[in-house]
Every structure is written in C-alpha cells, then in structure tokens.
Amino acid sequence: MEFNENNIDLETIIRDEVNKYLSRDIGDLPATQQAPLELREKYEKMEVPNKGRDIYEVLKDLNNEVLNYLYRPNHPRSFSFIPGPASRLSWLGDILTTANNIHASNFANATLPINIERNLINYLVGKIGYEIKPAGGVFVSGGSMANLTAIVAARDAQVEMEDIKKATVYLTSQTHHSVGKALHVAGFLKNNIRRIEYNDDFTMNTDSLKAAIDKDIEEGYKPAMVIATAGTTNTGSVDDFTTLGDTCDHYNLWLHVDGAYGLSHILSDKAQHLFKGIERSDSASWDAHKLLFQTYSCAMVIVKEKNHLLQSFGEDAEYLDDIASDDDVIDPEMLGIELTRPARALKLWITLQVIGEDEIIERIKYGEGLAEYAEEYVSGLDNWRIISHANLSIVNFRYENSDLTEAQNNQLNSMAAQKIADSGYAIAYTTVLNNQRVIRLCTTNPLTTHDDIRETINRLDQYIGDYDMKDA
Image 1 (tube, rainbow, N blue to C red):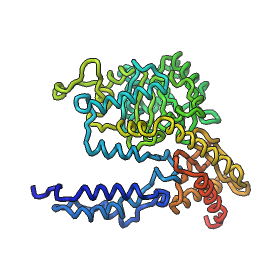
Image 2: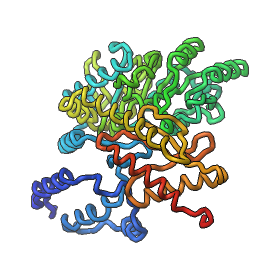
Image 3: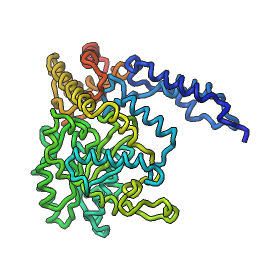
Image 4: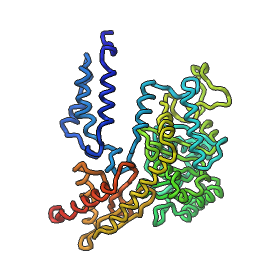
C-alpha cells in the first residue's frame, strides 16, 4: 500500500479546523444559503480519483463550497422546522466518540458508555413519570426511528399478525409525518389510519376519538393504538394525556406520545402542567438534538415496560455468543433495530455533567419567553394577526389586509418568508393552519436575542409593505 495517513499532518489540520469553528460567530453567517447550479453539478458528477488528491485541496472544496451552502439549524435566526441549537459540548462529545469509533451494541464492547446510556434513560424515564424498574429504552438516531421502534413494539403487543389488516390507529392531521412512515413500515394499512378531528388549540378532540373507536369496533375492526403528541411541530400543542389515558385504558389501546420536539419542555416549570397524565402513556419519543441541545443525531425511545422492546427486537446470533451479556443485563442492540450503533448518549452526558440540569432548564424557558415576546411584538403591528398563541416555543402569525383576497394574503405571507430566507438574514418559513398560510417561528436557540426577533418581524413587514400585488 503506497498511501500512509501518518504522512499527513492531521494534528495541525484538526487543530486548525476546530479553532476555525470555535472562533467564528455563526450569527454573522447566512442562516441559509442555496448552492448555485454549477456547484451542484460539480459534486453530482465528481469522480472518485484513482490517486488521492492533496488534503488541503479537498479541505478547500469543503470549506469554500460544500460546507458554505447550508441551512444552519444552530443559527440564532433559524426559526423554521425545529432548529438544532447544539451545544459545543455536544460537539466535543461527537469528536471524542467518533475518534474512538465506539461500537455501542453491547456491554462487552462498550461497558461504561452503555452504563451511561442506561443511566440517562432512567433519568428521562423519571421525568416522564414511569416506574424505573420495568421501564426502559434506547438511544436512536432521531424521532423517526424512535417512533418506528415504539410503533413496532406496540404492534407486537396489541395485534396478532393475522389481524393486521383489521388493526386501526388513531392520530390527527397535526401528527408528525414520520408517524405515517413508521405505521407503513410496521404493516398498518393506510386505510386503517384514522385522522381524528382536532380542537381549536390543535389538540386531539377526545370525543371524536371515542366515536371513531366505537364505530370501528362496531364494524369489526381491531383498534390498536393512539398516537398523541407532546408539542406538535406546527403549533407546539400538547394533547390531553389524562383523558387519552382514560380512553386507552377503557378500550385497551396502546398510547404512544411523540415528544420528539416538545417533551423537553416537561423540565420547565412554566410548561410542566401541560404534560399532566403523560405517565399514563405506554411509550414516548424524545429528541435530544432539539431541546437538550445536542448535535445530530441523538434521540431516545422510552417505554413503560422495556420487555416490549425485547420481545420485538431481541434476536440471537451465534457469532455474538462470546460477548453476550449476563441474563440480568439487556444489551442495547436487543432493544432496537440497530446492531452497529454509535455511543450517542456520551455527548448528552458530557453536556449535562458540565452545565447541569438547571442551565438546560433556563435555556428551555428562555426559548419559551422568546415565543411570548414574538407574539407580543406582532400583536402591536397593523394588519398582523396571531393565528396560534405562543405555545412551548412556537408561535404562528399572519399578515392580513382586508382589501385583499385570502389567496392574495396567502401569497404575501409566502413571499415575505421566501424573501427573508433568500436574504440569508433569517429563516421563517410558512406552514398551513386551517387552510391559511401562516408564518411560524420556533424560538429554541439560547443565542437568539429580542433584537433578532424584532428585526426578523420588521423585515417581514417591510417586504410585504414594498410588494405590489399588481406585480404578482
């Protein structure tokens, strides 16, 4: 072999690259920037060389082009989707776990990292209100995988496979789209997914839920589970877990809570009351790479009884016999889909150990306050209307001119959102609520200031003020 990595001064390169990122102010960069067509074509068609290129040439491509044109979820004026305001301590955890290339499938391979993972799962179990002994969970890549893992466990607990074509699931149109994917992968028929009406506050209407379940039972279907949400992506709405728990107990249904975004707010004394009854659920998803301030990817699936995960994902393989754990210990690979898996919990552990729970809570509460401030500021502007009040850390509003049609007002809101994104100053994309185009802010970044909020809203207002509908 001709190539020797030891001939590259990686120590200097790594130090220089890390220092470059540590010294930059991300707020000075565009919040989002689209790559030009010529660069997209360049990297789409770039061939793998027979002989390697100079590393500095490759790094130049990365820094000047590949990593320059990005959506930056940790930008202080990134308000769309669910931003990812990751702590640098999490990044440090990524560096260390990646450098050690940890294979965190079982205790024999990564004993202490898995001890830490179990410790953090128990910590989160306690926050939800499950009993620690029967409960359990595992770290996964994100909310999509967490929801899939829980839904498979629910299917196996609730449905005989010969009855899968009759099994029904209940959710709303506000449920995250990853749930639909998970239900498809788990074998539930699309025609058997019931979309329940939601209330004015975008939470599931429990009376409509009960009526739908009764109708399905009467028609010979087999109701299996309800998918509730702890903080919807659109509005931050939290379902009524107490009533849902009563309903699921009555009909013997599995209650899964998608808490990928919102469940971290259970740590905040301002929002804690919204989660009353969540301990009645059977499983929950929780993203650490959202409001526990971790880098992608870091999430958890948590179940009230971990044996459900073991029954769905526990498999034996002869080549793993020599590293099989004792009977009283369940390896992570027996609780989920992945065998090859990184030690995702370590970066969360580093973050929590260094800054502590109190700081995490203060950051979450700060984001809640930013959403309230945005609502207050928008309410003072002419022709702007709050569509959904600040909930957790999400607020929705809309420009409305009474002299224009609804379609024209929709167009203005979309135009303003696209203009501010194109400028790179902020990302404040729209969503649709009750058939109206609205501008949505998700304010989770501890680095976001009141000035950032005001200037973003002022620019949106200015774009609309400068726009002539005759040019549309």
